[in-house]
Structures are given as C-alpha cells and as structure tokens.
Image 1 (tube, rainbow, N blue to C red):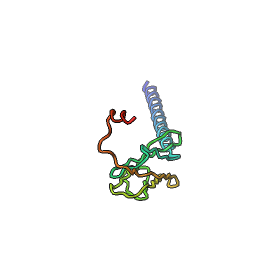
Image 2: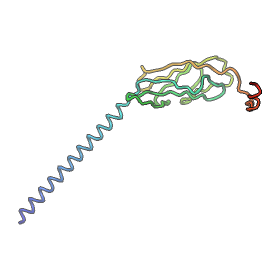
Image 3: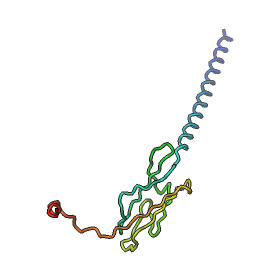
Image 4: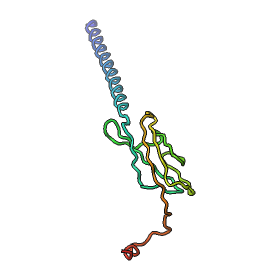
Amino acid sequence: MLKNLDVATIKCRRLSDKKRIVRKISLILFLLLVSFLTKAQKVDSIYFHLYTDSLKKGTHNYINVDGKMSDGTWRPLTSKELTFISSDCQFSGNELVLPPDYKGEKITVKVVLKDNPSLWRETTIWVKRKPDPDRLPSSREIMKER
C-alpha cells in the first residue's frame, strides 16, 4: 500500500512539474509576442497639421506634427520623437517662440524623426503682419457694416 502511495505522489508531482513548465513557456511566448507587436508600430511618414495659417509675434506657437504609423493609425508626435529646427527662432518642445520684435516675413520649420533621421518634413509658415485689435467688434457693429 505504501508503494502505491509513493507512485501516486510521484505521478502527481510529475504532472505538477509539467504544468509549471507549460505555464513558463506560455508566459515567455506571450511576452515575446507583446514585444514584437509593440516594436512593429513604426512611424511611416510625418505631416504638419497646423492650427493656424500664420505665426504670431511675441507668443509660443504650437507646431502640430502627426505621424502615420505602419498600421495606418495616426499619432501626435512631440519633441521626444522629433527634432525641431527653425530657420530663425528657437523651439521649446513643440512650441516655436517668436519674439515680439521679429522682423522676418516667414519661418521655415523642419522636423526630423529621431529614430530614423532619413524621415523628415519641412514647411514654410508666414508670420502675421497685422497686430491683433485691442477690442473685437460687437455683433451689432458687424451687422451695421453689412
């Protein structure tokens, strides 16, 4: 009877060891799959999607750049993924800082993907010429003009 108990205990332990091995292998395969899928999402192309048609002097002008991923989805890109280069002014993150006394008519902005420097995009953005009005016209004033 003692022999039968020992055989049963050994079989149970072997089965338990096999389950542990299968779990470890499954976990390793799962982690490999997850790491493969996360690395598979690469930036295929980059595009400017500007919020305005001109830059304002004396302000921080946000330069919006989106990346089209290899799976077709879009993702906003920041200075973590991109290097921002300007023909005249300085960048602070994604923001182009124009001093109030800036004299130029336009600024050329170039962005370069840090992971793949051969992927870049460049655009020219005009600087706003007219100053902002101190007061916006009321709806009555607008209707009178028409």
